[in-house]
Length: 300
Image (cartoon, rainbow, N blue to C red):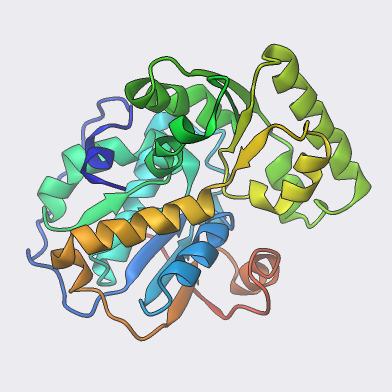
């Protein structure tokens, strides 16, 4: 999440809606917003909370409209912008798109077209760039695999970002459409999940047998990590996003003290969902230990 992150992700040029600009300068004592289309962003929040325990966070899951992965660029952009704007209205100065699909399909447009209208002092950051930045120091063969949702694979955001930083690295992608529903239905620990995990891993290694590094390009996938490793040769390293994003955010706040100084530090987390509170709290327990008390949020 460095300065380059704000202007590099590929996207299409959509006409942004017009906004009445918010007051500039932000609000001292604001929480850091963590947005995801569903529950997977909770794995990012887990690692951010470990790395930066003192800050306050607001987690917003757009569960009523999930999944984003199969939706068009235009729809993902519209939904993501609505949620980011809502987090800004709740006082967040900084919002993390803890969602690969939103980072791939909406981040650049929001950064370049919308923030100057909303408030140029606010920031929206994604999860793809921090993941890509480490690849060059991990792969020895120069062949990297990506396991992700259909939407993230179709966006080609990971290959494009890798090419910008490491032109010689070859990226092979494999869409895994069954993995997210398996996890959200709490079936990921059962034997039925093995079939789909093994199938997708066989597919990607058949497409490129020289892969020595595998990116988990969906925030849900860390919950399948143990099964994934069962079907991988020992020499292949798995790159999971949570810790990388957390370290990158820590670095970003140290370099951007004007943002860090406006963030409150009481160690609190608030959870909001656009879906049923009971449903969210029950499913969220798969991603975070213990019961979560969430509040319902209506998007206009």
